[in-house]
Image 1 (cartoon, rainbow, N blue to C red):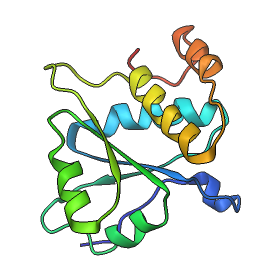
Image 2: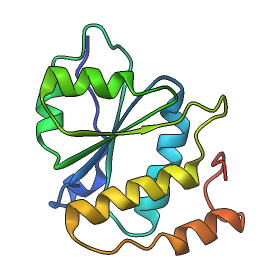
Image 3: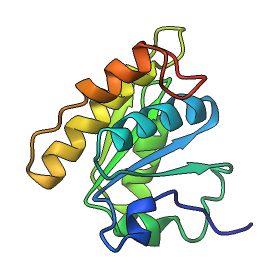
Length: 144
């Protein structure tokens, strides 16, 4: 199994993100859209998406250890978060929705922003990025 690819542009700039968003399955699109909104507002956040859950990728533990906060959005009751907490002993924060509807990028961006604020001890304002997305100048494919 190939190593995971972490999308963390701020690491290249020399100041890696403190928050990692970890996803799998159908959360790929909403996570990408939510992360883009937070980055567009000027905040640092990393993301990684799992393709296989069993076995977990060999480098997952090392990746998780690099971040202060880990958010795991799921469209269920938090099974992945439970597995990650148990296996790697990290305080992963679950963002769980069981509504029969897809996750919304704006809601997910708000949850990511709250975690960034907590991790960095700052106030996070996503209003500019949200205004751009709803006015049609955001990247395509983002659900509102």
